[in-house]
Image (cartoon, rainbow, N blue to C red; front, side, top):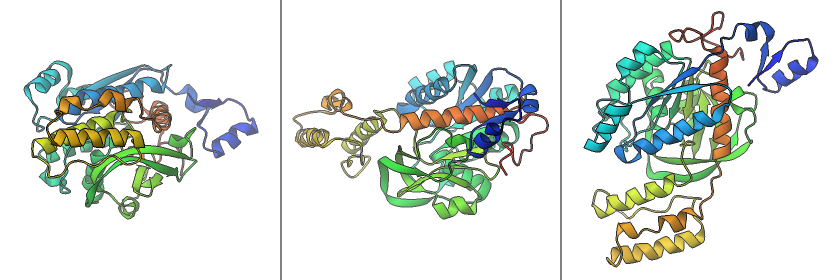
Length: 351
């Protein structure tokens, strides 16, 4: 939670200059303390839908032990679902019409499994654009993950993602570029982030869109914010991933190879597995291809015990900071994105 500058103590000014969140007494007195309503547009395929729910719910739930959060999952009707997942969605998800009627303080949009670079060929393109357009006018801040970042940069800024050939996947070291932005408060200047994508928006494209880049790596941009510094948060990686998420994805890729829906046996995610784990999985591959073993024999439990999570702490801090920024700027009336007197072009008063 933020500090209140209730006196002229110089340390408040110094801390604010260093990037700490400091509210004026007037701003604090005008804040309405209530629960936050956060939407989760879940576009992940059936196999990852519920795991993705839990990942983002967990991140929000861990972010602040004082505020109360209502999370509202919904999906897009244009995404085809199997019988089991359709039943889950019908029973537990809201419709976009429900979301628009009740309003939201913040919105999270997940990635989706679309390998082709041209997003206009995605079946949910128009429906997703409708959500994005609505959110910009009605929601304090929208957080986008991977494909959602690519989609918003195309919808709003005309920046189309490009295919990169070989899949970028694994856990990669990243460097913070802006230590003063409130999203970066308390975050290590270097930390890891998982990536899993066939396409990218380049640094030049982010810059052309006016995006303020906060975190990057040798494999591309990870985190940025829209020109107003809050209303859209762009993740190109997958900071929400659990420790085992890439292992689960590796298994799905093996299944795809066995079912002949991909041409090659999947390579290992980079910087993720120990050398011993790679040796175990190579031996498993040999026996799987010779039909001595089946996919059910994949030594998931054995491998999972060797995995390290080197991104979770940074992710938790960033999400906590994001929630804090929303909490400090959203209107008491859920149908209005910002408190009275806040400049929507500079809601954090950073310019």
